[in-house]
Every structure is written in structure tokens, then in C-alpha cells.
Image (tube, rainbow over all chains, first blue to last red; front, side, top):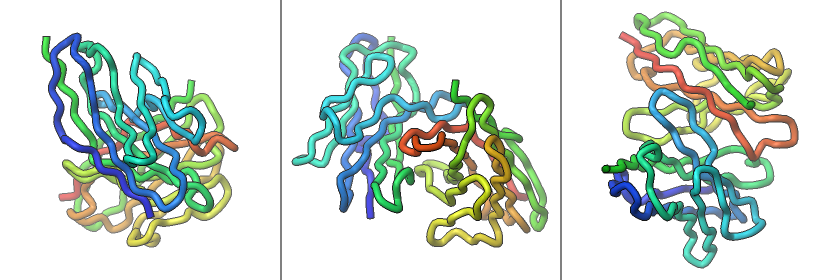
Amino acid sequence: AQSVTQLGSHVSVSEGALVLLRCNYSSSVPPYLFWYVQYPNQGLQLLLKYTSAATLVKGINGFEAEFKKSETSFHLTKPSAHMSDAAEYFCAVSAGGTSYGKLTFGQGTILTVHP
Amino acid sequence: GAVVSQHPSWVICKSGTSVKIECRSLDFQATTMFWYRQFPKQSLMLMATSNEGSKATYEQGVEKDKFLINHASLTLSTLTVTSAHPEDSSFYICSASRRFHTDTQYFGPGTRLTVL
């Protein structure tokens, strides 16, 4: 069984400030971890994914996430927020074996960026 | 590349009727498609996984006779909500992945179903 917890349903930052979106996971097997972004009226878009290679993963639009097994975390960061980063972000986990490809999502974090 | 569309984007129907939602991969062949449901202020919940030419695999608690899934081609999967009731009102989202790349899913924009 696997689960994902995103801490904070809403996060608000100023333009140029650090973005930190928190994600903790639970998985009985080594997980694959993902961050997706959803802009209004659009489908989810993959930002980045961890699949047991480098623990620091770089994604699109300047985002990165670090897999920390000891903390069961996969927090998403961006050094400097841009207005265009305002969206809803989802963390997701997938297991291997027969569950390969099946995603379990967190509840999402809405990011607001103030000028 | 890797665009997935859904049709319709929203639908309103009367209780007891059936509604079909289409999911298409526009520029790639999708050997696996996934159907999710998202209730307001909740996360996406996987309903079923379908592989082209095979019967769909449903998650626990999802009624296969109520949510009929067909994946007859490499670019099209359909979800039919049969005898819809108000509690079926939700946001239905599909995703698609390429052969041997199931770890990457491309998502459609979703379909908002409202059952009166």
C-alpha cells in the first residue's frame, strides 16, 4: 500500500521568493515519485520524476525535488517564484511490480504568487 | 508532443441515463490508459487501468458494471457511466502512456460530469 501527504493545501509566496511545496510518502516498496502541475482548465503536466537514480531531480521550469529516504519526503522547490508558477501542484507515488504505473496522488497544493 | 484530449469537457445529464466520455491520444500510441475520478477538494483516485485490446482492471470499490471502459484502439479509450446518479457527479480524468514507458503518464484536461 502507498500513500502521499502534501502539507499545506494553499501556499502563497511573493514573486522572486523561494517556493517550497512539501510532500511525504508511504510505500512498502522502493517508490517512484512524481510532481505534476495543473493549470486552470488544463490536464496535469509532469514536472519531474524520481525513479531510483539521482536523489536530486531537476525538472522543467526551474523546479527540482530531492528524494530523502530517511525522511520519506520528496519536497518540490524553486529558488525564485514567477507569476506563471501559480497553479495547483500534485505529488504522486507509484510502486513497482503489478502496481507499476498506478499512481497514488496527494491532495494537491495551490500555489499563489503575489507581485 | 504527447497530447491527450477528452470529450466532452463537461456534460450534464438526468439521473438514470448513461454518459460516454472519450479519451484520445493525439500524437502517440497509448498502449495503457488510466481513468481517474476527482471529487471537489479531493485528490485524484485511480478507477481503472486499461490496456489496448484487453479488459480493464478496476480498483477495489469501483463497480465495473457501472463504469464501462473500452480501449479498442491505440489512440482511444472510452468510459461509460451507466445509469448515472447524482453521487456519480465528479471530474473524470484520463491519462495515457506509451508502450514500455508506463512510468510516464500524459493527462487529459478532464470531463466534468453533473448528474441531476
